[in-house]
Length: 280
Image 1: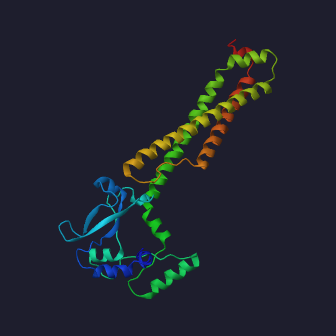
Image 2: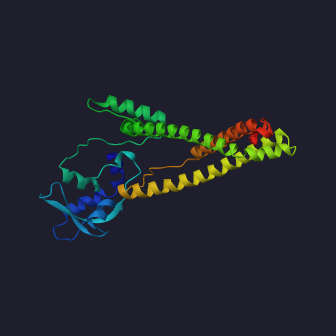
Image 3: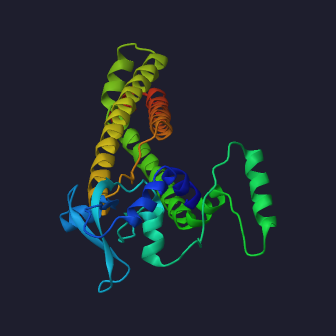
């Protein structure tokens, strides 16, 4: 990150030297960017003058707010309540009294081969340096969210299995209620195959309609969940996502179970004597 900041501020560094030589009272004020959550909580606006200091009672620099920064959609930052302020590099150095030292910095590379070469060369440069791939750091910091994701996946599997059993039972009961209709069709001379086809077709249509209603309900619920938690944590992170893979899986499962349940009950009714269906 420090290397990136140096590159961005390279055109500004000559001006910084001239600013340091400007006598007090000349009216030259540096600018900063603040977290939009801090701006909202403190009632700050673009152009406001604030004092930035290392300690609440210590001396600081008077700066002007030039921009608001919105926090990214990073799961590791959702529960953090601290505010962020972006300064010019020389401002930050004077504020923290760190001089030319850095704790960590980021280096952008152009290819996986360049990444491996950069990691090796940095680690071999001197004792005390340790380079890590950003992907490895992201995996390490996201372990908690991986556990939560597996937990949610387990809950989803249990919910789907329970819903499938419930759907199967409902479909069997609905077909069983058609006993008299099936008996009347059989007495009219309608073949068993035609009866089975009609019941399976009806079960398929019911399964498709139920799937469509379920997808619509899931989408609306996802929008409500995201709206509530994005407002609560003030983050653009999406907490609920309805993916095409989830929709396809849910629809296929519903249709397959509906057809299977309808076919099972239809075959059972079609091959039962019509008078037995009437209870005689």
